[in-house]
Image (tube, rainbow, N blue to C red):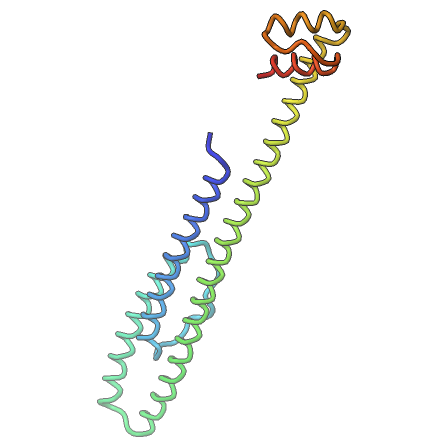
Length: 192
């Protein structure tokens, strides 16, 4: 039988591993987004489960690389053909893109933080449920012991002190004491 503390320890280990994985993922995302601060954001990053978040991260990175490539090519073409007024417009677009990338990075980081908190909360809930199960199991076990004790006691109800002393002697138990003491002694021997 596995003890509740084993489940709690396993839950804590899973939480630690998952939290460190998410931290690595968050650091990796921060590193990538730092390189692409000049790119636009694509709205806010929705809160999703971990699998979908990983898939979206890689899709996002691919989009950032493609966008960076297209952006660099467009800048090179425009730089070869446009005058100072156009260059001013490109700088304005560049600032907008950078602001959008920063916004998307913040949304992604917030999503990771929320996911980490959800994992911690679920681990806490699992641990609380295990504690509650252990309490209920202990309560049921106490109730079973009480019922077994009461049932064993019924056998001896109505016997005289002499009859109880004879039964105790047959089991090599002390035969002295009150009727209640003799009954308790016999019941303890029966329930061991």
